[in-house]
Image (tube, rainbow, N blue to C red):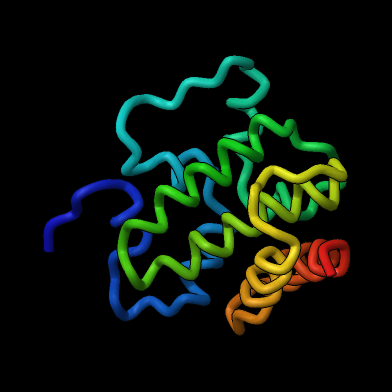
Length: 149
């Protein structure tokens, strides 16, 4: 079986359930999961953003800090690009997309999207209902959902 890139190594096995893929994503550095498959090297204008990208999604969701808005925009953009990839991984990356928006709203009190409040409510509700989602991420998505209703 050929392995084309790092993310395919993380998500390739068809036996692996969405729950296991999500758990793996939760513990992996975001830069390894999100930037893989995107053309060109990852460059941040501020070195502190690279430090944020080395964190896992679990760390980002659990911490009470304020992630830089530039980092959350990068995270959202990478997740959006990854939506065009493997069809079975689209729910995973769509959820990461909504997590980045939720983090901006809950932690920073700002929006990083042009989606309407109705579109956000639908997307956040959809993302928070995945049976494989961990409790911390579900709680974050639910908090953001209540702010958009």
